[in-house]
Image (cartoon, rainbow, N blue to C red; front, side, top):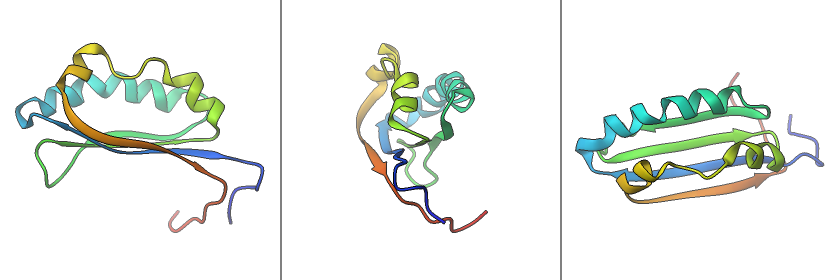
Length: 104
């Protein structure tokens, strides 16, 4: 069953590209942020993960209960060091008003 029509869940999804030699250290540097996000009010899921096929790609996925929850957590985004390691990427925010559970 979907979310009530008045709810507006936020999905943040996409990918970042880094030098393959730097990917593991980049991800290690994200562990604290992942733990903080998962403990934040309104966070349903948060993952920053290595892509299983492309050695320079990092997949990003976040799910938040509301725009206010994501804005409260967001802050300034990646650190300057992390931002410098990113070669390119594409990450977008989606505002969802309905969802259907497929598993679980």
